[in-house]
Amino acid sequence: MKSEKFNAKYDEKDLLMANFSHELRTPLNAIIGFSELLFSEEKKNENRQMLEMISSSGKYLLDLVNAILDLSCYKFNKIKIESKKVNFNLLVNEVISLLREKILKKGLKISYFVSEKLSSKQFMSDAVKIKQIIINLMDNAIKYTSSGFIYLSIDLIDGSDEKKEMVSIKVSDTGIGIAPDKLPYIFNPFFQADNSLSKNYSGLGLGLSIVRRIADCLGADIRVESVENQGSVFELRLASTKKVSTEKASTEVKGGDSDVLTEINKFMHDDNKYKLLLVEADKTAQWLINKIAEKYRICEVRTADSFGEAKKIIKSEKIDMILIDDGEYEQNFEEFDLLIKNLNSNGKNDIKKIIFTCCDCEETINLMLDTFSFDDFLPKPLDVNKFINLLKKYKINREGTVFLPAAA
Image 1: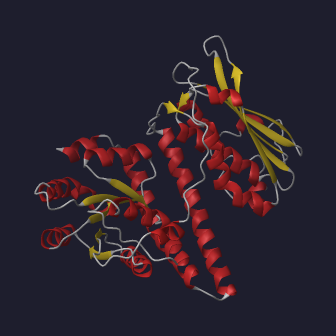
Image 2: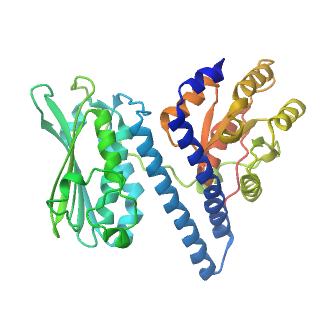
Image 3: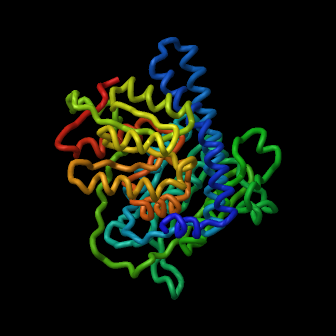
C-alpha cells in the first residue's frame, strides 16, 4: 500500500511537527490572505496602513513558524541535497531582489561581488540551500546594522589538499558586532548575544543555527569574525560536490518573476471556464479561495468539505484541477490517486492534482508528490501570485485555452 510506505517514513516527531505546522498555518492563511485582498480594494490611506500592518505581522509570525520547522527538518535529517551546476550571478541577483525592500527601509548601502573566475567553472552543489544560507546571513546583517553598509562577496579560493578549489561566500556588515565571549555560542538555537537584544530586534535566534545545520548538510565550513560595535564578517567555505571543470558556465542574469497581474494583460478572457475543486474543511480557506477567484476572474470554484462529497463532484462534473488540503485528507490520497487515474485514462479528462499544504519540508513534499502522483503543490498561507501562477501554468496548456484574471 502506498499510504503504508509513506507513513513508514514518518516518526512521532515528524507527525508532531506536521500537526504543529498545519494548526498554525491554517489561521495565518486567513490573516494574510484576507488582509492582502482587502488592501487591494481599500482606497483610504489610514485603512491601508492598518491592513498593511496586519499583513506584515502575519508574515512575521509565518517567518517564525518557518524558522522552527526548518530547524526541525535539518535536525532530523529530513533534507535532500541536490547536486547541480550553480549559477552564482543569478543566485546573487535573486537574493538582492528578495531583500531589497528591507535594505531600503533601513537606509543601508549594499554592494556585492561575484568573481569572474566562477563564470568559467562548473561548480556543482545545491543552489537552493546555498541561497537559503546567504538569505539568512544577509537578513541577520540587515537586522543588526542600523547604519553603514552590507557587502556580499563570492570568490574562488584555494582549499585544502583534499579540496583543491573552494567557493568563499562572505557577508560583511557595519553592525553592532558580537562580544568575544559570545562568539562560541552564536550558532546555538534560540541564542542571542545579549538578552536585551530580543527587546530591540525581533526573532527567535534561529537564523544562524539553521545556517550551521545547512552548512553541515553541504559539507561546508562556516566561520565568523566580529568586533563589538564595529561589525561582523560571516564566511561560508564550500567545495564542489563533483570535480570542478573548466566548461563555460552560463552567467545570464534574469530578474524575478514579473508581476502576474501585469503580465496577464497579454491574454484574452475566455468564457470556457476552468473549474477548480477545492477539497478543504476550513471555511475561511474556502471563502478566501472563492473571493480571489471572484475578484480576479481566475476560475470557477467548487468546494467539498469531505472526501465523499469530493468524489460525487468529480464523478458528476467536469473538473480541471483538484486542490486538496493535506492536513485533513492525507489518508484519502491513495484513493484519490486511483480515482483520478481512472478518469484520466479515458482520454477525455486531464485532471490536475495539487496539494494545498502547510508542510515546509522539501523532502516530505517531494515524497507526497511522488508517492501519490500529484502534479504540483501550493503552500499555505496562500500567496495570491503563486496561486495565479499555478493556474496559469496548467490552464495555458489546456486545449489552447487561456482563462486568466483581468488586470487589477
